[in-house]
Length: 113
Image (cartoon, rainbow, N blue to C red; front, side, top):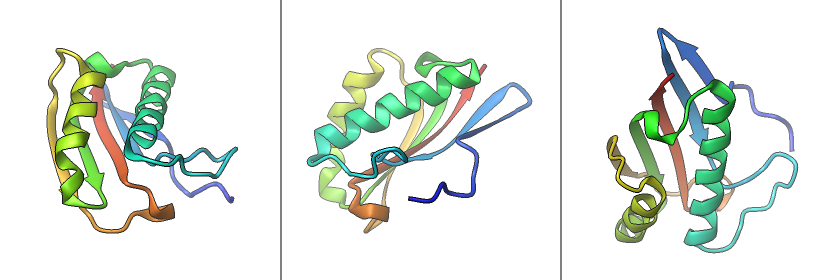
């Protein structure tokens, strides 16, 4: 798989803008089966990007979650709540229809440093 033409994140004025994270790795372009496995990988990737940028999930200000099917909303909300714990950034879940590689979700975010 060719590397996409974008940065995983951009820092501007003390904020980290995280590009959409799909549940797939460039080194292993295979999408895990099932929503739980895909969500876990997306959260791991989000943590890694935030860490590289000098931030972390507790500094998230806004999160946007794209889901391929709105019927996934309740389960995505549960998995997201488990991942976030008590931290509650602004968030929206967007039913998007089919996502790249037939992924079930994609997450983008804004965090502070």
